[in-house]
Every structure is written in structure tokens, then in C-alpha cells.
Length: 194
Image: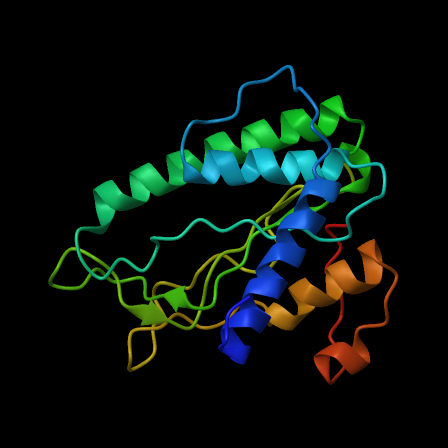
């Protein structure tokens, strides 16, 4: 043990997290091969957690690198390929363990992007973003209006088509049967994709 109380506390928490993770990992062999990259490894871990019979309510998997203020084209091509390959593998794993019908996979980002390319060949932070959802109960399609690229505001942002809280209200109310009013601090009508 460390003489530093704060460090000792952090080390205890780290040990507890590792022990818990080992208990939750199902150690299942999947028929498919997961992509060999950090995001593919994270998806493989998510699939192991989903295979655990104890049940996991939420798993968060991150794919970083979308904050592209310069040279966006090649970076986005690579990131979207990683995302597509990872989500394809995750879907196959969820189907294999018979969890596809009861799982919703959803994307989100902490910020949107402006539609116009900047001088560096990238895009700057904006106020709107596309979100994606998939799962056995998800009804495909476009919800909201397509981006109004002909109506950008003075800062170069497109107008909102949907309040993002409707997206989160959909998961709370239609997937988990949790009233969203208190969580979202207001009433936001769920979307009909679930």
C-alpha cells in the first residue's frame, strides 16, 4: 500500500474495477472475427459483456477522432469504415447470442459540426449532428427533416430538425420504460423509431 492516501484510494478502485470486469466478461468464443483495431477490441469487449447471463443494462464504447478541423476527408473515411465494421461485428455477435431483439445500439456526440468546409479542409464545431440507432426493435428511416443547407444562420450552423432530448426520451421511455420528464427536466416527445 502507498503512504499517499489519495493514491492508495485510486489503486483500490482500479483493483475493484478489474475484478468486476473479470466477473462480467463472459469468456465466450464468437463465430465471427472482430476488427483488429482499438474500436474493434472495444466492440469485442461489449459483446462479451452482452453475453454475460447476469445482464448488463448499458455499455459505452467510444470511437474518438471525429473532431476534424483540418484534413477531414481521409480521416472521416477511415473513422466511418471503423464504425461500420465495428457495428457490423457487434450486430453479428448480438444475433449469435440472441440479444439483437432486446438491444438498442445508439450513437451520440458531444458536439455537432458545421456543414461548410473551413480553410483547412475540415469542419468546425456546430450545433447539429446526425445520430444513428440500430437493433431488432428499431424501425429504420430518417426522423426529422433533412439538413437545411440553404438556411444556415449567421455562424454557419444549420437549423435544428429535432431536439436531441427527444432522441434520449425515446430510449428512456420506449426501451427502458422510464419516465423521461424528470431525467430530461421537461417533456420531450419520444420518436417512433422504437
